[in-house]
Structures are given as structure tokens and as C-alpha cells.
Amino acid sequence: MIHPLRRAIPALGLACILTTNWSCGNEATGKIAPPNVLFILIDALRADHLSSYGYARKTSPHVDALADEGVRFERANCQATWTGSSVASIFSGLYPSTHGVITNPTHTSGQTFASAILAPQVTTLAESMKARGYRTGAIVTNVFLRREYGFDQGFDDYEMLEHREHGAAVNRDALEWIGKKSASPFFLYLHYMDVHGPYTPPAPYDEYFKPEAPKPLPETAVIPPNLKLGDCRDLAVYEARYDGGIRCVDEEIGDLLKKLDGMGLAKNTLVVFTADHGEELYEHGGFGHGRTLYEEVLHTPLVFRLPGRVPAKKSIHTGVSAIDIYPTILELCDAPNPPAMHGRSLVPLIDGKDSAEREIWAEIHLEKGQPQICHKLDTVKSIYTLAAGEVGEYLLLGEDPAEQKNAIGRLSAPEKRVLADAFTDYIDKRKIEAVKWSTSATHQPSPQDVERMKAIGYLPDTGGKPAPNGKEKPPPDPTDHH
Image 1 (tube, rainbow, N blue to C red):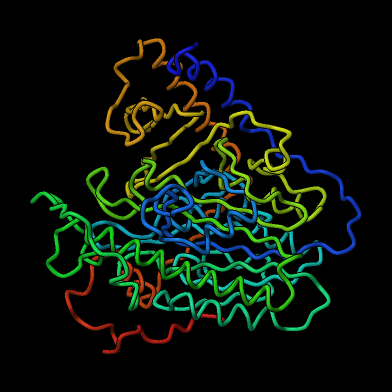
Image 2: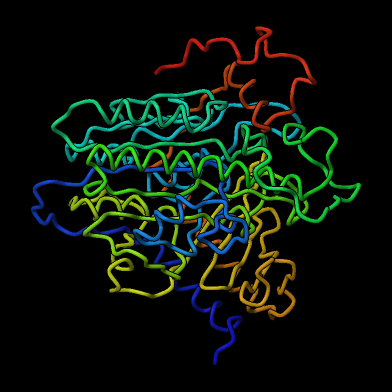
């Protein structure tokens, strides 16, 4: 048997070239009644905290039932570990440095700066669905998805709720929107924030799971201000609260799907369930997301359900990417001629016609603009830092799933050079593509959005001071459109 160290290095050099091939779609099959599409995304939901993905706690009975009724991808990965960049990749099918939404508009110092927007020349998933006769809607709750960042492209209706709104509010507006009479099939995107920090789910979910044996954090551990639970420094408490958020949103998802069935829509509705990224709970010395490319933030759930078309009770072990969701939805809806993108349809995997491992790329762009890039092929993972111009971490997930042992020392100098050259090739190709697919236009967060960022931990809090109007919610934002 060829050791993964030897197998991955030549494969990486070839795969980096193949990555830039654009997806090709099937011609329309002439299906008369295309399915509705309900696209559910849970912010900051790591796959390994769902019971259907092997987690010990029963956090997700309704999501588990959904997975039993469709196909579950065991090793799905996001392309970026913060919301704006990841969702831009999902809705464009492009890698982050191609679409250009790469920099989170916050600094750890507490400063904010203008952030890139999703370019109008990108053909989004919503635009593709609208062009095929779908009524398109979105109900979102994350400040980084505001219209001003370009995420409303292709949507007939784009509603921005406050991030404090729980899944019940998203469901309420979703069911009202679905219930509007229309001769067209619908595409509805729902973005839930219940799991995202701060880890304060409503009762009874705040105490739904009892902390297990205490896990005291070391004195050097820094908990972001807006994730702190009072003076608590017991990691087990943070894990229990995070899991409570999952159980809370799972209940809301179950209620939504039950009501969808009651409306007679379940049989002809494609349900897609995923997350934009995961969440670190001190596995690598920190909390939150957007600053590393380890599995706790990279590995996301992915489920497709469409009765009569997608097989039930099927799990697929092949590694796949979030950019693959876009072309998969189009193919399952018999939509011809998808636009150019990096994503590849997952239908061949769903239909059992393909099982080959796919390479996976992901990126983070820290506040000084120096990116880290991750490549995965099967269980071999490399992380490259542009500033250093070299692969700094070489991780063998089969041997070390917790990513605590850097195997870079097991590579020879020529092998390291092959790896570095492949990453350089990836970067160069993305720069060329960015000329076409990204824009220099930016959006500066409003004072109201700065307060929203503070509330979910992206900026230091106000030191106990109330929001500018002295109330729980920030003042009305004149740029907010519903």
C-alpha cells in the first residue's frame, strides 16, 4: 500500500490544475414540474456536534430524521471559515480569492474597515434559479449578509432579521412567504443564527445539556468578550451551551419541515441542509471561527432530501466542498447550462456513478491580508501560509484526526517544494480569475452594524454600556431593506 505521504504529493500537483476546470451541466430532461428548493443554513454549526455525525449527545433528532430521508455527506467542507466569504462561495460556486469577498470587516483591535462586496458580474445561485422561473426569497439573520454586501442578487424578496431573532422568527416569516400563492416553484434560503455565539440559547435549551466532568481552561486561555459566560472558565459549560443552541434550532427545523409537509409540499421540495462553517471550542487554543483552517471550523454538515429522486438512508464518505452545492441544486432541478464555476455537481456521487476522492481547497484572509490556504485530498491535509511562502503544516487525518501532530518533518525538501509550488499555482490561477469575477467596490459598516458585530463577538463589546439608543436593539438602520 502506498503511504498517504507519498500518494498525496504527486496528486496535489495534478489536482491543482484540474481544479480550474469549470463545471458542466446536463441538458434539461423536460421535467414538467420542477421541485421547490428549501435551502437551510445554520451559522457556525460544526458537523461533529450533530448526533447523525456520531456525536454522543442527542443534539439533532430532527436533522437526523432529515438525513435518514435523504443523502448525508460525511465529509463536507466549507471554503472559508467566516460567514461572508463562505456564503459568497456557496452562492457563486467560486473559491474565495476568485469572488473577492475575503476579508472580514473587523480587526481584533476593535477597528472596522470597508469590506469587499460580491461582484454583480457573478451569477449567483439565486439568479440562476430566478432565470429558470423560480420565485426567489431569502430570510437572513447575519449582519455580514446585508444587501450592501451584494448578497441579495437574484432574490425577489430579501429579508434581514436582527441576529437576536431565533429560529421561530425565521420560520414564521418563511411559512408566510411560502404560503403566498404563486404558479412558480420557489427557491427559499433560510439563514439561522441560533448556534452562533454568544452561547445563550433560550430556555429550556440553555440548561438542556448538563456539563460533563469539569474541563477547566488554563489561565492563558482567552475567551472572546462576547462569548464569555460570566466568570465561567469551564470548557464543559461552553460545550453544553453550544450544544443547547443546536438542540434549539433542531427543534425549529423539525417544526418547519412538519408544517411544510402539512402544506402538501414535502414530496416535491428539495431540502438542502448545511452550515457556512463550524466553531472552535478550544481544540487549538481559541474560540469562534474565521482565524484557522482546522476541522472544527472546516467540517460542515450537508444533507439533500428529495423524495423519489434522492435515495434515502445513504451516506457518502467522499470529501466534498460547499461550492458543489450550487451545481448540485441545478442538476437536481433539471436546470441546464450552469454558469462557469469551480463547484462540481454531487449528483454522480448521489447516484452511485462516482466515488473518486475530490480535492478540497479552503482559505482564510487575516486582517493584514496575508492568507492561509488549505488543501485536502482524502485524509491528507496541508496548510500553506503566503507570508512564509511555504507549507507550515502537513496533517495526516487518518492517524491524527484531532490535528495535534504536524507531520511536516516527515517530508523531504523536494517534497516540500512540490507542495509549495502547487499552492503557488493555485494562488496564481485565482488572481487571474479575480480580474473577471471580483470587484474593487467595498462597503463600510454603518454604526448600527458595528453594534451588531459587537453583539455577536466580532468586535469588543461596549464594556457593559447599552446600545446607542439605550435599548437592547440598535437604532433603526436607514439602509435596512426588508
